[in-house]
Image (cartoon, rainbow, N blue to C red; front, side, top):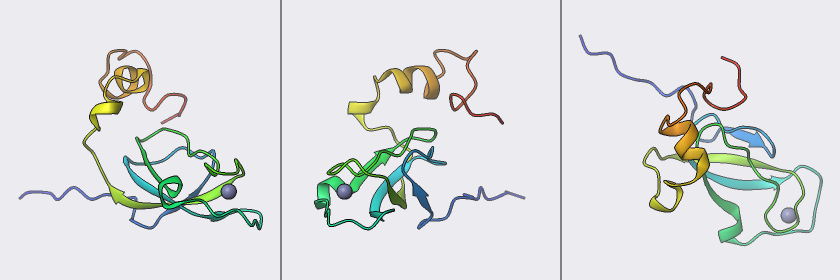
Length: 105
Ligand SMILES: [Zn+2]
């Protein structure tokens, strides 16, 4: 019998700025935590993060906000494939480090 691999992080999961994302994917800015007149552009609302990376604050005003997982995405974009994070944490060039960095299993 083949077991289907299930993703335990549903699309639409919301997370706050400064949280580590639980899964690779596209994230979208939903709203500010405190009420705000700031209105980020479409480009500023979209973000690709790999598991273990931190969600940033609002890209326009720098205040904390809520982000939503909108799409799973497991291939690493070429422009991200040589970052220290990928080299160390994803590709395993440093297998002695726990993964993701700083998080206890
Ligand atoms: Zn803002």
